[in-house]
Length: 630
Image (cartoon, rainbow, N blue to C red):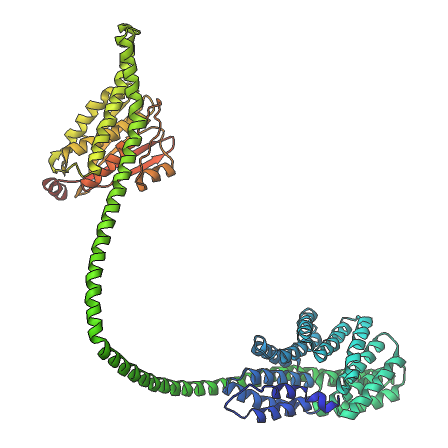
């Protein structure tokens, strides 16, 4: 393949967009892009200007391909000038545009440009990563030219890492592909690469032979950048062989070419070599002048990088402003078109709807009447079935709970009592023996009686058999009455009651239900209290409600047990300090009756330290008034 055919590779990529239909002159842009790719080595400034025109059109028409291609051309052209920072920046922009697109071949070329510039910037790790991506892409696309490009840039990376033997082997792999395709340009690059490698290895004659091949090929295709680099390499070889005059001659040729295209990177190296030649010829003043010129060019390279970035930012800003204006205009036009189309569609749909309604009016009316009557009947049946199902479920749950309590908590004590009485009547037990266990029997009967009472009240409450009848009464008297009633049970554990000062506090609640609540709470406090401790029953008010709390110094409960009691609608039971057993129905009943009387039940407990159970009931109106006044 000839040089022109090689340079037209990227133009061929643009022309391959057979299915690409845009409302702009893509052929003209392709011609600009072809000019830029053919001249970036000999006239990079002209290529940059053409690439900017392609970029502007690509942004204006939202063409991913032309935007990515333009950034790629800018990266190549800036690299040719030695502006590595600008080249890298444009390379990354091209990669962002193309990475997730269908233009994978062009994406591979962008990866190669980035790998080359990052290699020259000594970012070897990142350059290697891009080469790995390009190699994988070449394998997927089965592209020999892209694979050869990977060999070309990887040999450069190996050269910079001073792995010269690997660089030579990799260059030979690339040369095999390029020479078979008659790709003169890229073959000259790899001949130049081998010349540098042999020079670094000290084989200067061999280096010169490969360098002559590169000069010959670059002369055929007019590659000014390549010729500038090859003449510089020839000067290096001559200098190493102590042929100073020949080195000077090659440098003059290199200077002329590099100054023409603006290849600052190699130009700096050439001035450094010129200074070394003058120094060996004892031309001290000339050597110093060359070193100064080298420093000036390094500063110029830095300034061109900074200035290039500024110009790039300014150009992109102008393009973005232009793009925003075009976008706003397109959106306005699109909205008008959408409104027009929407109105037309609406009119058509409206006419169609009127026609359909007119034709189906009578049929629909009859169908609606029939459906309405059927739906009403179905809804009524559904509601009745749901109500029956809910009622049956609740009754089933109630039956299960009642049977569970009766079978587990009442059958045992009653069976024991029956057995004792049978022993007494059959005289298998004497009266004295019966009397000796009567106290324990009385305790069991009291527990059984309390269980039956709680069970009955709870069952009635679940079946709405209990009515809450509120009236005014002094809660203090109820507390004293319940404490006196429970004193006998408390004395068995040597417990004492501590109550608030005798202050009248009238509440509005059901007297019997409040008594039952207090009996259950105090009984639980006795059950879980340790011997020789106290149970405190304290009353307080907040102006609208009376708060009664029962505190014990017993075994307490864990947070999980407290949560189970307060938040779940299930009964919970726990063994007391003297192995007293219970059903948990009493606490469920307390929660139910407190709720019926317009109050709330609260539980605070710490394991090993005790439990405080409190509940609220509304104050009577006169009591609330007295509290508010006080």
